[in-house]
Image (cartoon, rainbow, N blue to C red; front, top):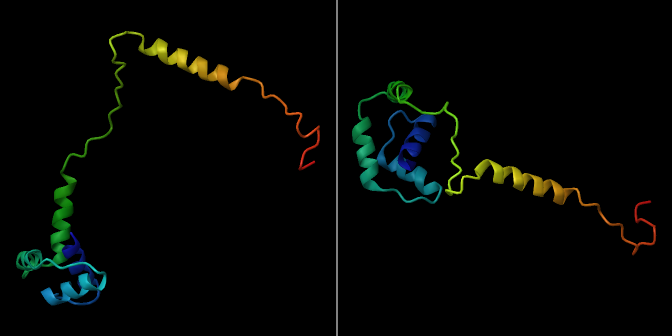
Length: 116
């Protein structure tokens, strides 16, 4: 992926036909090692082709790929006890009871607050 990104950066920089040395220079400028096999493969696959047309064709292919989604999430109670929803309600009641406990005032400050 980094080889493709370096190739595209070279194109954006105005180089209409980036070479392996151009790609290596771009990758080297960010401290990344260049894999000669991948660079050669990319350049051989793209030789004589217009990158804009290739990207457009790729977008069309991706548009036809099903992306899933749209469905709801099904949650299983599991456990075999059969008390899934009842246990959840009981837990919520316990949480509410814990939250309702009154806060005790501290006598340490003797009625004075730092911000009064």
